[in-house]
Image (cartoon, rainbow, N blue to C red; front, side, top):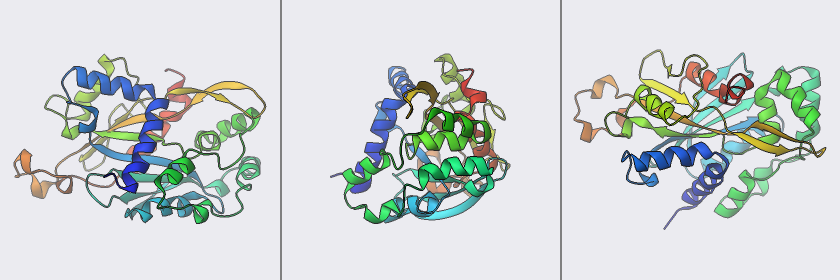
Length: 298
């Protein structure tokens, strides 16, 4: 019997997969090539969400949804150049993905950008999670895919894009799932490193984020990540204009075995034996999967 958390995650993945064709394309190829027996065999390393740091919203509000289901708040991160704060959350059981939630430091933007953002987010006069029945998985799923504020105008989106591509993404996409992540270290030999899996993806014609290199590596060498370039989606704005903008993307993570457990046989290795958490330097470049510097070449 699926738990409420199972239902929420399934709802997120269902809508995300429909919106990001790369997901189905990669899964289908992996099945056809015998890399996985079925899509359910893929280990989801983590999922990520973007939020606005304004009253009633942001991390403080959003995290309450998943802490209700047993997630535990872990390390903080700060991205100075992108004006972002973030935390990651450990799941209640290893079978669930980690969660990474970032928040735009709206107060660090120009007065004009702040005014634009607040013209939308000020519509939210109370924390919306207060009125959400967190035990109703269907209600939570609908909430995560609903508009918290009115549809933005193209002129406002464009102005935000000039200053903060993150701000522009959130003002249109809101709480849509930003990405999910395949744990490549659990794949068969030959596909179980980010480097080898990137080669496979490129043979499929998948466009990879090359900001900081196609492989992003933590200083300790134990966490390697890569990602696709965000899918472009057709978006209709409040003034009736339709434009193609950045949607969501797919990430790939390789978590190496921690040195104290290097002697263990491969069959005994679990999530607890691998490098946990995240790396700010890696994430900083992964954020750019939705940036025009990447999507313009898609």
